Length: 338
Image (tube, rainbow, N blue to C red):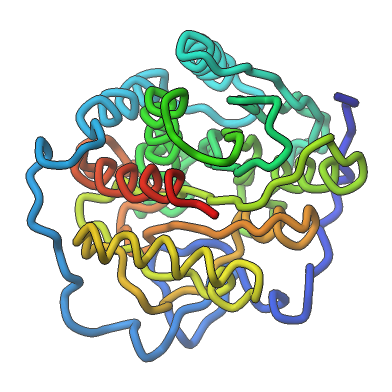
């Protein structure tokens, strides 16, 4: 695909409803609206979230192997856009998905370095299964890491491996790839690993370069297929997993049925960590995919994660059980998607 140099200016607000949204924050406050979230005052504090009483071996999704994948990604080290760590991760993922029967393609582009304004080579990774299908679903996770743990109280220029943000989402997609070839679904399936979700050094820098590029390309140069649904997995490995319904995903008329379907599946499976009420409004990659690409995409995200954007976002603060629960629900949805 064509290489494009994205302009360094901050993107304009996508719509009036998203103008006040802002970045994910480690300590959300209802009195503030920083760059990427807004919380529901009613649910900001309250009783402890419900926990489902499953043992890892009782869940028909291999959370232990997904957790091993998470650790493999973190063992590479930091993986920001344009880095050697990102290139090593791409090689690992390409070998993994190809071995399992996926067709891997790269969507290459350039984005400006936030500090020098020099172009940085970036690439979204797309993995196709059943490429002949004209009706498809898109499962997404960003695979870049923040360059530094900018919210760490002691060492904001330290080492950041992004275990939950977002090796967790990528690890679940890696594990799902074992099941995709034999899934009975009416749709073709694409996995999208998004680059440059947070190639930022301050909260003023520009987020979502990869999803913006993907969405614009999909809208302006339509492929011979269409995405019926999209699901974004972000920060889903927390030991203390709580998955509220993201407010944009619930508010948009085209995506609300998808939210309700997935959370109803979780309820049926008794995965109680999927909590069927909204708490946060989050500006994430799904907003670019929905508003620019017109893809009916939702965000599954646990935003109650104290180590967010700190050095403590490490595998020890993630759980194979959480990965198993999310993977089980998503795989069940793939089998039932209409």
